[in-house]
Image 1: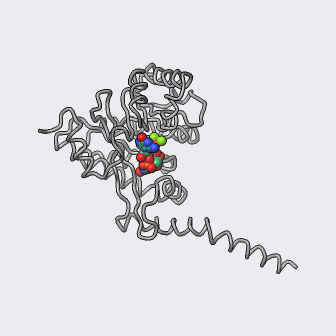
Image 2 (image 1 turned 60 degrees about the vertical axis):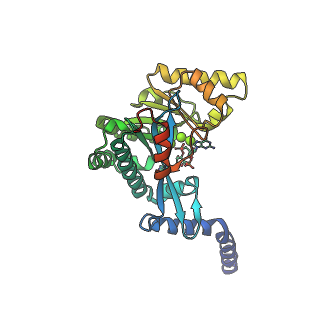
Image 3 (image 1 turned 120 degrees about the vertical axis):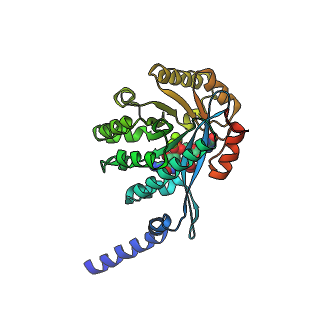
Length: 282
Ligand code: C2E
Ligand code: MG
Ligand code: MG
Ligand code: MG
């Protein structure tokens, strides 16, 4: 009986493995080779000031594999986080971003900053700040031109461990941003506990902001909260003029979204920056 039950269980596993789990395993093994095969790219999405001029760009990882084609970061970043592949991927994104930003500086695109997203896992190894310092030095990028975006979930989950690492990063002179603000966590205490410079309001929040008077009041209150804490406030996922107006009117400093530009490969970002930078070369 035990034997046949075992077989039945095996058959069950086999059936389910043939769907989601197999796809996931195949994605995982493909992702293991993605960097070495040059399948990971970095795209850049501009952030603009109230006048629509570029002040910084966010580096976003892109994966186009031979087996799966374009895979969304929403799919591969969590796999990278679980497998530890996020460490070499972040290193690649960080170095590509620093190199590209330094190139834009040399091309005369003002004091443009570049932003890189960090995963909670990076705070476990204890030497992430050393990697950041090396990347800045290798490409000659001033530290205050690098922004590091950390989701509020990370700040809440990693708590005490994260704070030491954040202080080490802060000591380098880089700017720290809380990303996806307004998604899920209700504790605001961390805004003062961590050494933050930038508050990025999540796009889910921005998309609801113009839906009603209550939503508008809440949006303005969040911008005011950020400003009063001395943070630079950024609205993410701005898709309409009315969203831009609402957040600009509330005193938001920077705006990012399809209204201005989608994430672009470096060469297209070049052209976009040339057209939208106050100090762009003639
Ligand atoms: P995020 O850091 O919050 O980045 C913003 C996401 O919103 C990007 O999605 C961007 O393409 C999208 N977005 C920007 N403006 C708009 C808009 O107006 N409308 C809409 N609908 N979407 C907009 P993407 O590139 O798919 O990245 C998703 C997430 O994956 C990122 O969210 C970030 O958490 C993560 N991610 C991407 N690259 C990296 C990376 O190198 N490292 C880590 N740790 N995470 C990354
Ligand atoms: Mg981000
Ligand atoms: Mg974000
Ligand atoms: Mg987001």
